[in-house]
Length: 141
Image (cartoon, rainbow, N blue to C red; front, side, top):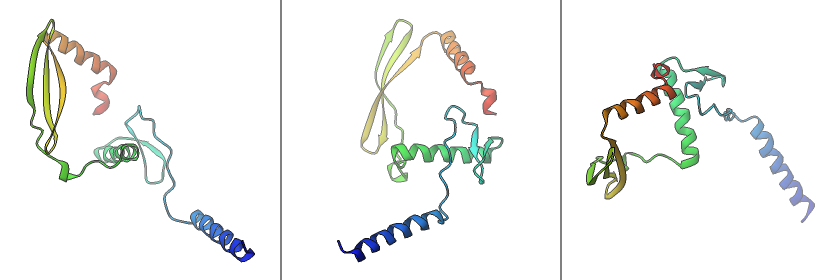
């Protein structure tokens, strides 16, 4: 290559690099602890504890942005449809009932899922108590 072409390439690369240093695009903030959903980034980039509904909406927006970075954009309203749950099969097994259900996940598409329902109400209460111990409801208020 001629020297003038080399000079033009180096000048263009230098311009792009320097202009990137002075651009007003926001700096990428460090990731928040994914196990603590009650923290969010304030406008200045510092980390704060969620203390209000407005704070939670900021944290939720960060969660959605992170998820969309990995999974792509969430579907828009054009994909929205009625949930339309149907029980396809029900089988009684020892301590629970197993239901094969389907639901409408988008227009013209049904998704199958198994729903396991304990027969003993005490088992349901034990599950709820275990969940409460893992994530106390008082943290969500």
